[in-house]
Image (cartoon, rainbow over all chains, first blue to last red; front, side, top):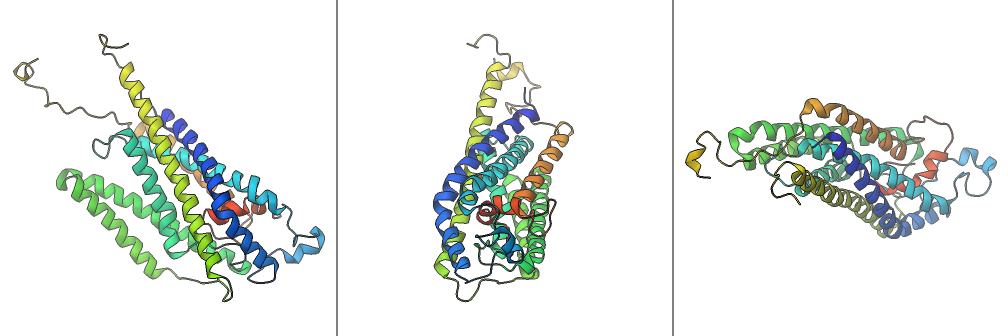
Length: 258
Length: 73
């Protein structure tokens, strides 16, 4: 028996595993560039962390309450596990929604498509206009402005994706799956391109910030997110596939079971 | 056995089982809320806005916030 609960549980589990994978990859691939940026920050280059006002009270590390070696290990793991599990759960439910609604796709293919779509909509598209920056880049005074813009782009991307999917599904009967899909993706692309042209941009990378560190950091960010969603897609696909196989075996075909 | 014996069957198209939206909506809502909560605390808390005072949450998830692509500092 197929229930939403089965999808949610599998999504949460896939997300937890993806969170572990993202932590390992993020630590190995992203650690060096984050460390290099912090070193630049502490050497006085770039922009400071923003808590210098209360620095004297907190002693050494410019007023940090969590030591760097915890931030880069347990702290990073907490972030990737929380994000992975929560987004995995969402991906699980979305796979439950999508399954059977977009043609005769297998469970594995549906889960992978959901994860790929989520990676694009939640990460790649906002990245196109507001790419992530390493520590030491970014002014404390503008964090509200930058967060607002990021959330706005994210919201536009999500709403546009929902509209695109809805459009594709509505037009399936009339145009066929392929052309309906093209219209849906095209509609999404048009909205995103307009947003990219209209939304304000900013650049807070200091002139003397090493381009190689910036590139290494952004590359690591892409890899970490790709691993997060890739693992969610593959593991969720495998788990839901097994659910279907089990379900198929359990449905009454009396003579052949066993 | 033969096709003639079942003239009213709509060919051999097996419908995949879909979950009805009536059944799904509370789960959709729930998973969206949980995801929003996670994204907020990992991605934005003690940055643009703060639920808790201080900088401990921000610093604890600091590296994840940067690497996962959220604006920081």
